[in-house]
Image 1 (cartoon, helix red, strand yellow):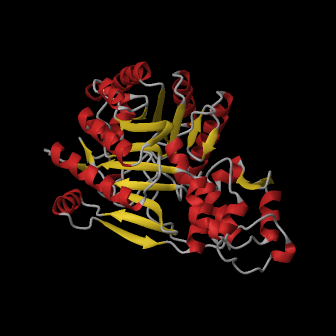
Image 2 (cartoon, rainbow, N blue to C red):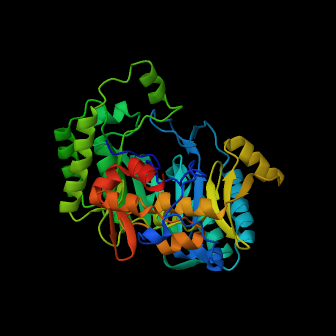
Length: 429
């Protein structure tokens, strides 16, 4: 079964604040003479290391019409939202981050949630204008908004495009009504396809999510569904195996033995293999464990995470990574929407900051970059303060077909990406 131990699951949300393990990690090509070397001092150039990944802005909108039973994101159902107050608070959050990061330009901006397509287009426009005022955008910047594929929200697409959004990521999740109901989705399959058609007419770049290994799903059914999805000619697909996350409704049902029909491990593994085979044949190979795109249409915002760049996290529960005066900081906002909003309105601190030690930066980079087909740059890892590999372990993983070593990069193979959790444990033991 393809593990998702460090997955960015449906919604393209930023990774959690800190990966738990603190493993040793690669410095360069396997070299027996360096097998037991101690960690090098971080290179002074590491203070500008974020430039290798880029700089982006994430805005979290925490509200949804309903809570999906599989979702463990910071999302909440609210009968009333004071849009003026939320717009002002989010702008204030962006302004606070800008004071820490002067002189930069944003490569990307991402509206995640929750359900950002419940935001009025005027609020989206105001937040994009704030980023332009505070940092400015790089030429050709990617500005993405997550959307539910309902007719009501699709009606706002032209307003979002006029505000400056140039890419939409749609939470379709399944292409049949029975499974959509089981997943707690409020849209039907026909409505989703109609919304997709509207999105294709309005935005040049459209992505959508599907979840597989659902209840009572067979590999044959997933193959037919994925072929249909590929025929829609989206330029990007996020394809996630269903995971039972602690604290969700599905987790409660599973604990009571009431979440029936989950596929056996062998069937789930076959669905993962089908996903790789069909997407590659369609010209949409996996550039990350769960994300597939035509060349040039990768999610530039998510690449900032996986390439270990800097990013602002604005809104309740949002996380960030910011390099400030040569120190890399992990930022985390208050999670409860009401508490965050009240703090912002009162001018009180709404975020915590923690400096990330060099060895932890190296570990974070390794954990994120090995998710990518392009893999890890060991020289960069060394600059961050990483320790070298045990060359015998690397050689064994290469011999087993789990890792490759080419063009001065260490990368997971298709087999290795499916076994990434185990491969990382072996690599850094």
